[in-house]
Image (cartoon, rainbow, N blue to C red):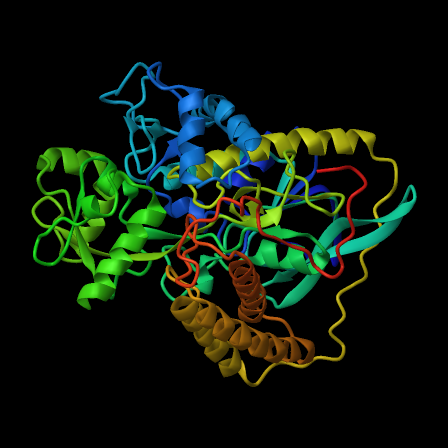
Length: 545
């Protein structure tokens, strides 16, 4: 966007999904905001979210019920105080989106909210507000359009963060680590610029591209989690990777998700011979939480040696399917499937990162001035398994609470920002071995799928850790010798995240929620604490969490 080498803002937001956009739009006009997007502004997980946003919008529903459902889905590892805070703020955030112009499906309404509410796995009530079957697209594109009315927001498209700019200062009797900006790579030009900011917010999404099969777009490479870890932030619960049960199984349908709402509206999972199998695994059948459904599908595929199972909603009226699922129906027709008349082939795929950068209830991390919101953060909301449609809700609520804390911090600031040294690439050269990056990327994603997937074991995790360590050494050497590129930065971040997932999985010696280990197949109710990893350069904050 600019030829300058060092820019200064009040707030630097890295990531342009629902969390980052919501925070940028909520900032007052006198606050100078930089909003960074790795690709086009709209590209990210939010754009592809089909189902909706959960919130208590009907008189027959209640906050207590939504809290209870979330705690149940989280398998005993949710922070109940955080869950209640998020759920209580849900309706206000839906109203904010409506006021910003998001057009949710309203006819025919189910209940007294005026919105059409659907039900998804783990929910005991219809409480998922949606925009047909393309809610994320409606939210993302609407909020992007609203940026035109916010001239205080400077947008940096096609920029990827390289690393955070940090420092250490004395605070009372002990030192305190702080964050005051980041280095950004302008992907088209290859230039690295320094951006200083009084507050830095990581809203970079999850890390599901660490797996061979995923519902996520290519940008979901765990950048924020890896950068925060390298900068000295604790990371928690990375063993809990959610595998969405139903991605379309087709060679041309890269990452195409079949929304959980299809099961919420009566879709049935079938074996190739037409036998329904979910009632054998859980009394809630297809409406069981995602971890149970994904494991059941994985079990049946391995038991029978089949490539996929089938999701059938053809027993519903054709006009209802077309009305509720226009995007899914249209895309399936393009690929030769008519969901009005036949079942769809589906497989599980990595979908959501339940763990992440450890934050407090104000979205603050372990570094003063650094915040994390959305999928990149571990807030305590999801526990061992995210309940459907709680993810966009978390993005909205924590962008709002972060805004409040950031404004308080801006009002109280006294010290000038430290100067970030220019990026030094005087001792590196352009790489003539890009094949190393592509081969390592493929190896990483394959061994993570094979050894750290839906079903794990001690031996598989040990194999994965050895391979991750070898890759990290090779990538670190490569990073030190050659100019940075987008692919190299993403690979560097992915191998860091892979190691965090493996370490957390090795520490949890039980099976719970999304983490299933064949050597510890039972749940251990003595292991109710989050799995927290502490980096070597960690320095506790002055204020308690």
